[in-house]
Length: 518
Image 1 (cartoon, rainbow, N blue to C red):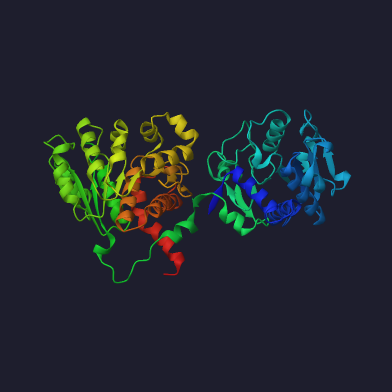
Image 2: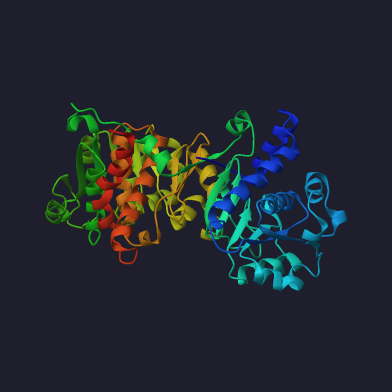
């Protein structure tokens, strides 16, 4: 599903009007109709049908006037309160305001706002938020902020028109205060603010209404891919019935150190669970005995560690030899941030000519000499940082990363020619050519140790099976989160472990494949 910024949506509206001759009044009518239909479907089955439309002076308010008229025509009791004077309403919004009966509209401009109309708010069975829309850029203050607080405190079901008032449509940030909606009806395409936190928490159920934007306009608009279940399903490759283990790649996982053998095992086992034909785990020889037990299906390659339990450059020749004939190399889970290990990691990233997945302390090793990425020989390098690791890689603060997750990921991927997976709520995937995606699966139960090791194994397996890199990244993060969603549905989010997710990976793939009719 394509997702756009608020600015892109406004440009689409202008193009539809100017280049394709779609009247602005028609777009507004269709938007209001889409909202009215959603309200009737959600709240019009039984009980009182009393609606309070709280409108601003812009086009979002104009959509609200259409909603008020259409619901009134369906027999609903409707009151519209406009937080402006009539003279301030212009253009298409004014045309729709003039179609409402004067007795149905109240003008209550700042500083009064919604405060004098608490009784009407209490009597309503549904409140329609048509205050601010997707054009908001500055913090909400004064009467509008007070109106939003009253709406949130009312306890009434709230339907937001296009986006809850107070949410930045491009970043998902709360601009001071924001409406908490039970249902949001947006138009043509979802906006980033609907899907990025904290905005997504304010949207409730999201519905997208067709308002007559020409397909050519929508298809030609720049956007970001939102990976939901349907999008992920289309990425899964069909397996031929005559396939064998050699058909699905051989993953080499370089991982582990004393105290972190579990990370190495989870990465290797997750590659197995994600369909890799063969997996070899290369780890410090000191850990080999325990890893032989922890990785039944994966092969192990004990690397000379001098009895230290961590890897250093003496292991480089054996790793390079082991990489011959492999499909992909994953580096990092549990590998430690030992200075000698860091040097080995940087050598591997520089010299390996296979697709690479780089995670955990391998990322920290790169952060010390980030220009190593500029000289890599790998045709495909996938980096999977969490926000703290991303901050070290980019040389900025974690707060700066979290403040612009999309921008930071996109800029880094382009600069260093890598695929960047910035983990977190709504994981971001950025390709070096500028393509971007936001993941739609997962839950807070994943906030526990080892989840990143599982993702490393998933990504290595998909790249090893020959998936196109951007497809592998998008499918990998979705499957990872989807497996966690399966665990949460059966066991709950609290106490979820990485191994729980690892063991549900086959079920996650099955859930997607079963929808293809295979």
